[in-house]
Amino acid sequence: SVGGQIPNGLAIPLDKAGVKILGTPASMIDNAEDRFKFSDMIDEIGVQQPRWRELTSVESAFDFAANVGYPVLVRPSYVLSGAAMNVAWNDEQLKACLNEAAEVSKDH
Image 1 (spheres, rainbow, N blue to C red):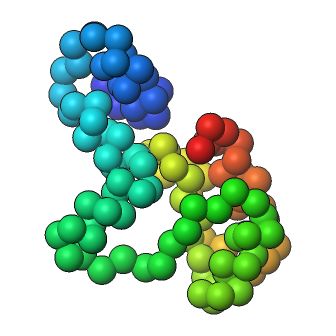
Image 2 (tube, helix red, strand yellow; image 1 turned 180 degrees about the vertical axis):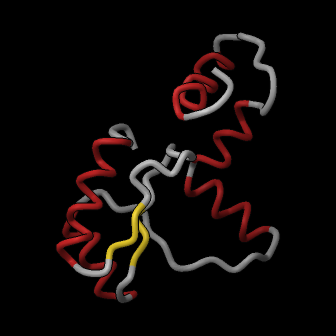
């Protein structure tokens, strides 16, 4: 495959195993996929970004949404394709978006 989530997910383990990867280096895929690394990179070049948090529970997501206000964007880590990336306009939509995100990005 030449794109999509499966190759992105395989790039780092294959790179660590010494497999030669053509195209985008595995470290750059990781920089784009990892929310913390990407945010740090954006901060370094001075680009503004909205408040965000890594959230691991529905309750913490509700607290964050109450703090920043709706709408909120749900974007799982390690999903560059945009799968399960959604905008929630209320608590009910947020819970549905989080359930979908948890299915798509189980490890993150």
